[in-house]
Amino acid sequence: MNQRWRQILLWGLPITVALLLALQFLGSGALSNLKPGGPTEAPRNTAVARMSYGRFLDYVEAGRVTSVDIYDGGRDAVVEAVDPDLDNRVQRLRVDLPGLAPELINTLKTEGISFDVHPPKTAPPALGILGNLLFPLLLIGSLIFLARRGNNMPGGPGQAMQFGKTKARFAMEAETGVMFDDVAGVNEAKQDLEEVVTFLKQPEKFTSVGAQIPKGVLLVGPPGTGKTLLAKAIAGEAGVPFFSLSGSEFVEMFVGVGASRVRDLFKRAKENSPCLIFIDEIDAVGRQRGAGIGGGNDEREQTLNQLLTEMDGFEGNSGIIIIAATNRPDVLDSALMRPGRFDRQVTVDAPDIKGRLSILKVHSRNKKLAEDLSLESIARRTPGFTGADLANLLNEAAILTARRRKETISLAEIDDAVDRIIAGLEGHPLTDGRSKRLIAYHEVGHALVGSLVKDHDPVQKVTLIPRGQAQGLTWFSPDEEQMLVSRSQLKARIMGALGGRAAEDVVFGYAEVTTGAGGDIQMVASIARQMVTRYGMSGLGQMSTDGGSQEVFLGRDLMTRSDTSEGTSKQIDEQVRGIVMQCYEETLSLVQGQREAMDRLVELLIEKETMDGDEFREVLANYTTIPEKDRFSPVLS
Ligand code: ADP
Ligand code: MG
Ligand code: ZN
Image (tube, rainbow, N blue to C red):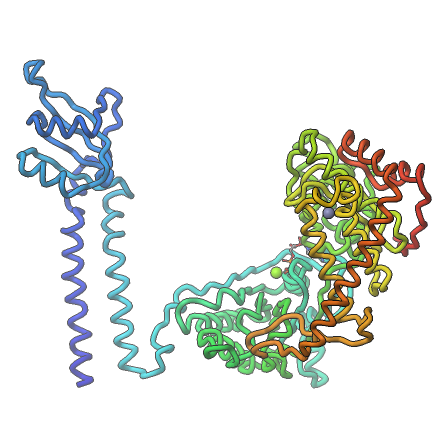
């Protein structure tokens, strides 16, 4: 039986191929295509007059049409018609058709009109045929391939298809051109990785004393912090080729593709050692196996298994180092972290202010900066920015500079670029009117409360120029490097966020408050709830009820268990409401007491549209005393 099938497949398939090819060849009209000079497109001749489709149908009915040439898949036609009023002179007319309708073809047939359909214009005729043939060829080719493999080496279903074999989708760079100097602000990570360069450059140093060279290093950190850049820099410093592959590319449609790519990758790497293999987004394949809902993902598991097998399969001193990157180390399969695999972890965090300064230095090397522009002030303005954000910031600023036809990048462009990256694109300011006044009071409310509550971050800027979703914005400058947030600071944040709504309330009345405060209210609720359930900052005392889990990971715990009883939930809600109400009362009375200052500030803001923090405080100081804020400000050399 097996033998017979083999016979049928081996002989039957080529014959089918030949038959199909012949059919395809004839059926596609490919032969007519080969006629020299055969038209493929309606002549775009202006001398040919146009005729409407309705008119054309009338002509057909009247028996005036002698021939029809249809082009462009039935959307265009050139018609020859006779004009009985002009001695039956032949006219050529163009008609736009609604498509290749069978009714039309039938009518033409029954009326005995000669017609021809021309294939749409594509590649040159010979290529066109190839294109037509390619599909059946490929399909049948792989069938034969399958049949033979299936007979010779019975394997699992995943073994039979080797689609991945032919198109190994990993990138290889002989020289990355990146050096450690190009990576800034991540000094600890760099120190850890310097050793890896030595592993690649002088492995004997370690092997001579019997040390096992580690095979894999896992870089952990949020996106844009320079993980890829670091991996490239290691290859660059060591002067070895850089092979890279992204985890998300493994997860393909066909089972087995990812595994075969891994195999190919390691094969090529071994041929090119010493070298570095970089696997980006390893969490896409390296998740915990076999725990997912509804069974695991076969493809991912096979890929991961292949990766583990390959890593175990070579000696530590074969000159290959594997570097993987992820921002979710918590979801990785524990098998990946075992000794002999990715047993070293290097954390690459978002840079602190000094780190940001040195990254800005790297990226401003090739930019023209105004003399009075200090990189320190940019570093101060950008807490939370990653290396990629900073690179993007300088680039945006450079684009703005060019657009404004300036010679050098100045603080104005940097400021606009920061705002744009954080809050989105600038919109058009509202024209003067009730809404603009309301928004002005709302923003001044935020800024006022922010300035007058001692523990609030100081105001950096108030603006009525819309950005992203927001109609107006108040910017505060956060304290640099503050790790812990106190209860009074959280309370200050709640009050600052409520300042906008309180101002609307005081000035326009409760009936007139708007949806504009929606985002603020949400933030308030979230801070207050965390104070109660996480930080033990309420009447409920020092207890945590949210279990500390931030995200449910399907592969591990099916659902978050709630260990909160119904009674406790009710108490939590009451506490949250209590905090918010109390804060709102205080905010309201603060705003009410500053009605005069507020009116003046709104007047100024509507006139100028943007006020910076100093300007704002200067005006406010005429009406009340502004508390001094104690801030830690790191010294930058
Ligand atoms: P990740 O791989 O961590 O997501 P990348 O290495 O791809 O981040 O960084 C993207 C770009 O951002 C880099 O090409 C580089 O221009 C810039 N960048 C990121 N981090 C740094 C850094 N520490 N120093 C200099 N440039 C950086
Ligand atoms: Mg990356
Ligand atoms: Zn607001």
